[in-house]
Image 1 (tube, rainbow, N blue to C red):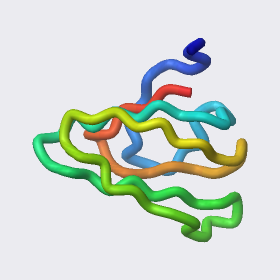
Image 2 (cartoon, helix red, strand yellow):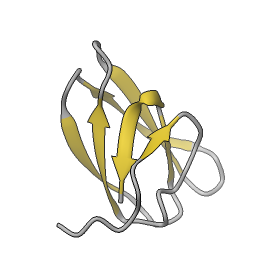
Image 3 (cartoon, rainbow, N blue to C red):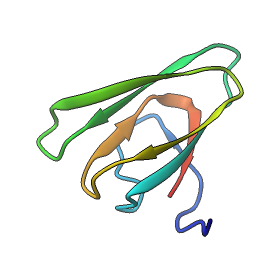
Image 4 (spheres, rainbow, N blue to C red):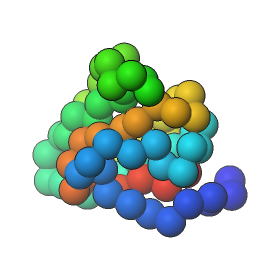
Length: 75
C-alpha cells in the first residue's frame, strides 16, 4: 500500500487529503470512537476502534473523519 499523506491525528474533522481509503491506528489504552461525516456535516457512520488496533476505512473523497488525538490516520 502506498501512503499518500503524512500521519495526522483526528482531533478535528479532516478528509485526510481526499483519500478514499484511510488507515487508522488507535494509540489509546481503551477503545475510541471514530465518526465519519459527509460533506454536509451529517454523521453517516461511527466505528469503535479497540486499543492498539489498526482499521482501514473506505470513504468518499469529501467525507471527514474525527475521533481524537489517540487516532492516527494516513491516507
